[in-house]
Image 1 (cartoon, one colour):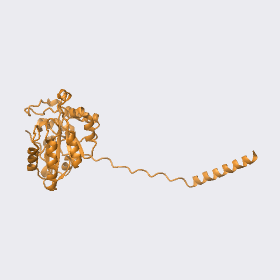
Image 2: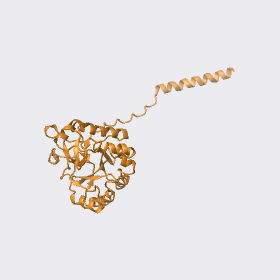
Image 3: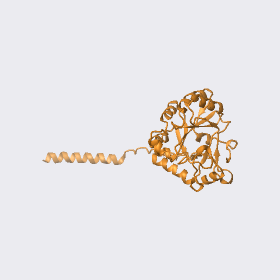
Length: 285
């Protein structure tokens, strides 16, 4: 017993000595993780005359051979029954082709589309190759006489845009862009004024792909290749039932434009590089 206590005392003394050494030389603290810079705000254009929502149609013609492919993911508020019956308003094969070809793109999505295809909306929105922008909630027109689309009343235009952003958040889309594309491309001064409080930049285009309801991919390919210039914004569609030839057309368009020296970018890059000479003011229909 005495021997045990002596040994125990020796162990305690050794432990105290080691503790003292630890006090004299404290362990180094783990290096603090670097603080990441806050995310930068997406580039937008300054309001137009009288504070109206600015309108962007194409990028600089002088800053390199860049081109933005944009895809409208259309679905109106009243097409739920058609989707339930089997009509496909999505186009996963097109998105897969863009990924395989490593083509950055901007997808202008309606809120109703995001509600119908939340998994796809989330996948697109979280892929750094793409950016999601607003194409309204309902795909109803913001002017009268717009390709037969139902019309959003003026007092509901702002809430229609905000409802789309809410649908994106619900689907899990991260950081949708502050860009808006008018359904049908139709707008006037009243619509531009109604959207001013949302802070969006309206994005149009200077090249019409012509893929809506077109079944011949070669027609789409020729129309795009004939129209593209440095800084162009090309409008195409991301809806299988309404644009069945788009994916085949993209597979031909991309290598041809790359062979001509064009670099594919998102709309945000074109807007960020815009100068005063290429910021079209609000042009009412």
